[in-house]
Image (cartoon, rainbow, N blue to C red; front, side, top):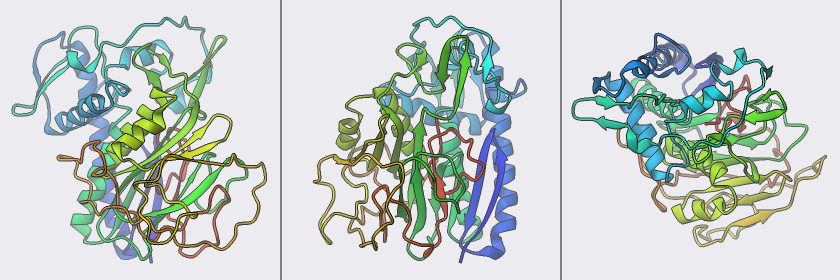
Length: 406
């Protein structure tokens, strides 16, 4: 039996699920305190945040709090692991496109902007000394941790709450989902979908599938929801650091499972930026993923649960597979068959020593997953703990896995 709480923080939706209902309120209080600290430390939109204070340092080494140092380390590590496809020095480029405040305050149709191709400065210009928690940001560089901070905060919160409460915990921030502690029977059931919706509502449009995980994290990045208009330009928040402009990508959403939510989110965002061939990149890293093309075609990489595989057969040797594009009205699902993809057991997410984006070792533990191929859910038992949607956190329910955009 589980209990859940839903609210908003960090400009996005928050969902907390615990396997012990009596501990939900106390865990929710601890989560609220944690997210308030993250907001005061890492927000690009608060003038009084510790991150914003770095804008005026003009290249001088500055000692920062351990919390900000950890957040910066995760962001710089993600940039290195993705070959710069995810980069924290995109702050000025985001502002130039009009994304200079919390998204719900952003005018959907604002003043015109001139789109200029200008690569972002790049993570190598930013130095961080973890021994002294000292950071140096050259003049003219504005940092943006939006691509990594929510997922890192979810990892950190899930681990902290599970250790404090001694029960299973799921934390989802805008769909960036981390789990820790003992999972519920059958694992954490998560519906991964392309359309925004509540946990108890099967989406009327778009493809979806349901999986179960026992550890690690799951994240989805997408370009279809968190959008705004400037003059004649339709923009979205996934920037290509090579151009400083919204990424031109064949994918509308990418969902990735990894040993930590931070790794999953970095990989899903990078896949959008890398575009064609992203499935090969994810396969090389050994990361289970589901990529939905702009025409609705679904491609999965080895390790992503599928109902068509033979029981007992390992999934890691399977090449990237292509699912049929979903129809507008999916047929009723046939009874599910258990998937055989247990995945490798991995440690619970660790915000200070996360597992890297490396082949095989970055996989989460899938368990008792039964998956419907873009056809929906096969009833309500066990109950789904959440949905995943790559819309940047605009789904008010944002439960269990992937709505994040980063």
